[in-house]
Amino acid sequence: MAWRFALLIDPVASDIRRDDFSDTFTVIDPDGAALRLGDLSAQRGDGIFESLGVIDGHVQEVEPHLARLAHSAGLCELPTPNFDQWRAAIARVAADAPAGESVVKLILSRGVEHGPAPTAWITLADAPDSARARAEGVRVTTLDRGYALDVPARAPWLLLGAKTLSYAVNMAAIREAKRRGADDAVFVTSDGFVLEAPTASVVLRFGDRFVTPTPTAGILHGTTQRSLFAHLGQRGFETAYETVPVSDLGRADAAWLLSSVRLAAPIAAVDGEAKAVDRTLTDELNAYLLSPRD
Image 1 (cartoon, helix red, strand yellow):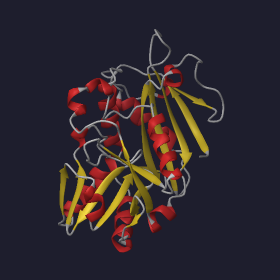
Image 2: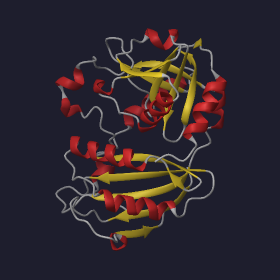
Image 3: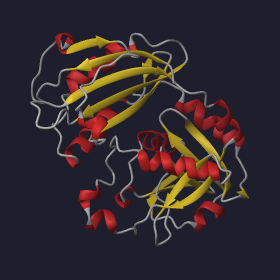
């Protein structure tokens, strides 16, 4: 990923309102050193983040991403982000976005242990080329996430459903999927229900009905998935959040992985079994997802 621009943000209280936050931003070298050695984002992965797609300079779904950042902050007992400040930072970074697809990342760390304040920064980078995944699809393997469907409700301290910087397990799952000859993974519960991919939501189609696993199962409530469901509803399709058994991955008429940067990638195989890719519908979905969305 080629980094283009970065800002350090001096976090201010969430209830402070002002017209100009520029004095709280510091432009930094995106390829240079920026964090103190003891920052807990690097020491323990103790922080949260959001990745926002950018299309021709337009940052997609800013408000849903800020809302989810605040939700993650609440789960992790981090200070509530000042939305006005983050909006201003996003606008400043997006001003340097080139034509085409980019990605803006928001990061909020607990900072240095026992330090006076959290650490926050925002980056702009070129988006990876997702053309092949969108056109040909991705092969997925199902991987046991290691807990039953009811664990999130019984063990909130596991922070399931928070978008934390602790992505070692997610990256290990993708490596395992590739060792098995797949492109990506789909996490499932130990009692046999679909959760999400390491970096994406899962959506299934049964006729004119679209289904995604309920977010109460301890998964991220995908911003792209919510936007797509609103679009599908306007087109007259039925959408639903449900408990999804693993067998539905195979029997669904079509399925996709959805994320803010890759957008809609059709699932072309599940655990080595080929699955039909609906190219026409996928192209329509991605045409919508590539359009400016607020």
